[in-house]
Amino acid sequence: MSDNTNELLNKFDGDVKTYDPPANRKRRKQKSIYADQLICLAALAGLSIWQSGWRAAIICAGSVLICMLSDMIFCRMSKKTYNPRDLSTIAAGMCIALMMPASVNYGIVAGGALLAIAVKHIFGGKDNYIFNPTCVAIAFLIICYPVDMLTYPAAGTQPELWGDPGVPLVSGIESYLLKLGTAPTVSLENISLGIFAGPMGTTHFLVIAVCGICLLCRRSMSLLVTIFGLGSYCALTALFPTFSSIGDTLLLELAGGYLLFGFVFLASDPQTLPGTAAGKIVYGFVIGIIGCLFRHFGKVEGSFIFVLLIANAFSLRLDDLCAFIARTFRRAFVYLRGNMGRYERLRSEAENEHHPKLTDTMEIIVPATNYNMPPIDNKVTKINRKKPNIITRFADNRRIKRKKDELVRRKQIRDEENNYMNAMRNMIEQRHETAPKTEGQKTSVPHIIKQPRRRSEQKNNKQGQ
Image (cartoon, rainbow, N blue to C red):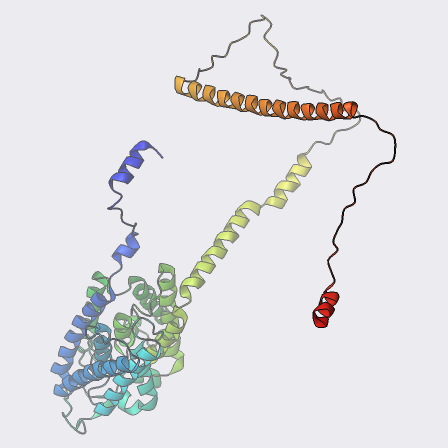
């Protein structure tokens, strides 16, 4: 590392920030995403109130209020802190209300809102649920109350505020397409403005399309999921149209049911959306292909909700699956690039290889050997070695001097020890030589050694005493 780099690091050491990739910088917060959705849902709610009357307003307000109260109760039961600014709860309540007919019973609305928040807290709360709570609630209500959920007030009628709706109930476009294979006579202008029988917020085709464009511009909706999901659905529908006119088929299939509304507000839920681009592409393909199969062969109204629940079950592992597939394809490509045509290359090399015969003469070329000999002119090139500086020489001289002093000190100690041992040896030899040699009996000095008594004797002596 250069000196300039070190200086820069030391200068900006306190202000260093971790690198944030562009993908992470562009990712928006969940609160802002739900805020953008609520603005669009509020516009759809206003159109529903204008078209269906005040009963639609009570349904929307009741659904949101039940969602907030149930969220507060479940947070208290699970010992969590309730956040009144959690916009995902309000967005779920608005979606549940707008996906119901204006003639629905208020008890069904309350049960659906309560079930959605219960599913949310069963999986651990806001950041942990696997299935979209709105889809779970609507799917449960469609299965349990198909007549109330799949019959709608006729276009241009406003149901009563309390009690029975008091207006005729008819089937939607999706029911005509699935059961009869035809479509009601609805003009293009009425389809664009949402003047036909259907759920309160899903019939406004043109407004939902504008909301989707706004959410895409605000990055509150996944562009990849929308393009590949709607693209695959429209491509399969165009290949196998219900009518002779492909344009009419696409328009009626997008306007009927929850398809367009679900792609705009439910499919791009940040909690159930894969994290990688490849995962989002596969997620969109799964929704589009399975949704087209359910719509054409399933004969079930509201099939997009069930399709989205199936896709939610796969969304957790789509990122790992895409990474595994990409890694496998990369290894296969590297292997094929290195081994493709290998057999042909070896075969051609074997055919072109020249096998020597006994009659062939071969010239042996001995490589030149360098023995580090001086040149012929006997001129030896001197190598100019760079002399060490004065500090290095001084350090080397001090180290050599300390080493020499250590060796001298060890030699002196060893010589002193040898001299001492030699002096002691000479002294012992002199004593032996000067000592008189007397012949006679050797006198021995008796030594009285007291043997210790045994423990048993000591005990007997103590007892005798």
